[in-house]
Image 1 (cartoon, rainbow, N blue to C red):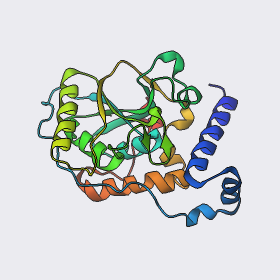
Image 2: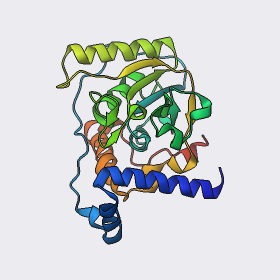
Image 3: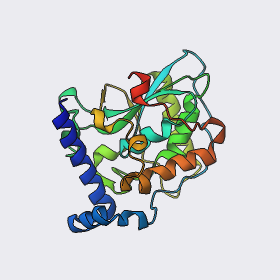
Length: 249
């Protein structure tokens, strides 16, 4: 991708999320111009304490990958980059085809893609079950259908893209477990799907939370999730995130 395309794409993404987070164009201009976003109340979904899955994957390979969708990939990636045992977390697109895996196209909501994060982890340090527990309790609200916070559309749906049969069974069983126990006030709408492809997002989307910690959308929606991870899962939280630029992905 050319540098001009990257700059234009980033500008479009920033404007879209800022507008949804704060208000209309005039208010956006005023907020950016005067720094009033610092006064906006935090409105991220509150994290909840939930039980771990009753079944988990047996230990096997030294490295494993699962793809998770739960709203804007900035926050999903940002949380998992702070989890011990995660060796890589890459923002991208899953659920559609390669020819439509571009931000502007996916944002129209008609490609079948969901903004997703490919999480690569060492199951000897953090299990798939713990990854999913964090996903359901901290990363997003799994009861929201085709939306997450200010972001609306099927591209922001809640979905687990399983890389193998074992992952699929663990994910499906955990969803059933949470619904049977009525852990949430509304049913979990997360789908367990077979992974058919993952397409990394544009470079300007990678490591977004770390690179833009003062951007209003991040302050309001995503930094509280990282704080919740540290509070609810202190034993596997790490201060220094594993970044795409350092993981070589």
